[in-house]
Each structure stands twice: as structure tokens, then as C-alpha cells.
Length: 156
Image 1 (tube, rainbow, N blue to C red):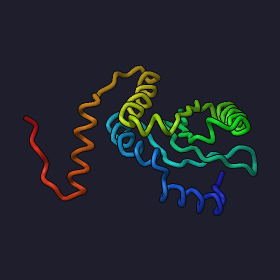
Image 2 (cartoon, helix red, strand yellow; image 1 turned 60 degrees about the horizontal axis):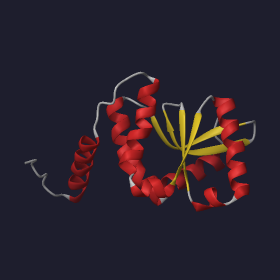
Image 3 (cartoon, rainbow, N blue to C red; image 1 turned 60 degrees about the vertical axis):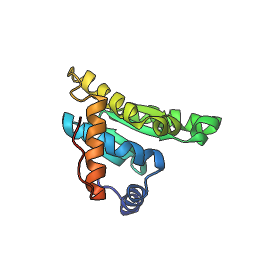
């Protein structure tokens, strides 16, 4: 099914302006997915019915949808109910597991969240994790230093 232009425009805007939690999780998730040969889509639109579209924050290997939830998703009973209905629909129509993670958890430790998410995919594929938290931190530092134009520090 072709994505309507209105949805395409909205997705482009969302990709251009990620939330703080999305931005914190995006880079470590990209590194891990690239290393483990896992497909990663950021702000991925999914068609639900002929005229309804839902956009998930991250889609991993077309099997796991990750939703990062702010306070209103956690505190508002009506919103929680809507989220449950939406998740059930995505799971039944796409056979995609939906994981909801509070923004606060991502902001506290985005590396651990990224490692856990990729670990789920690897467990599903019955593969071992090939990158430690330390290796991920080193990789992130290399990218940050390169973007800042700074020379890399040699490990002791």
C-alpha cells in the first residue's frame, strides 16, 4: 500500500524533529543494529485498515515496534486505553510485538535500553550478543569525537 502524501510529510517532520528520548536512543540503536545486521526504521508508518495509519517510533527487523512514552501516556487512563487498543491492532494485523518504554528510562540509560532491544532480536534469532556496553560506548565516543573534529584518544 502506498503511503499517502499527508502521512509522508508528517513522518518527514517527525524524523527531522525527534523527541529528546528518541534522539538519545537513535544513535546507539543505529550502531548496534548495523553491527548485528538488524533492520531499523525510525518513525515508521504502518497502515491499519484502508484509511488509518499509525506511526511507530522505531521498528526493529519488522518484528518489534518500540514506542517511547512521555508522562501523558503513563498518567492518563484514557491514553493508556487507546495505546493498548492501538498495540493490539498492530500486533494482530502485523504480528509485530509492541514494546512501550518510558522516556524517563531512556533518558536515564539509553545504552542499556538499546542493548536490551537488540538483545530481544538476537534472542529471537538465537544469536549471541556481539557487542558489550563498553564497546558501544567506545563506538559512540569515536562518532562524537569525529563530529566535533577532535583527535581520537588512544586507550590506556
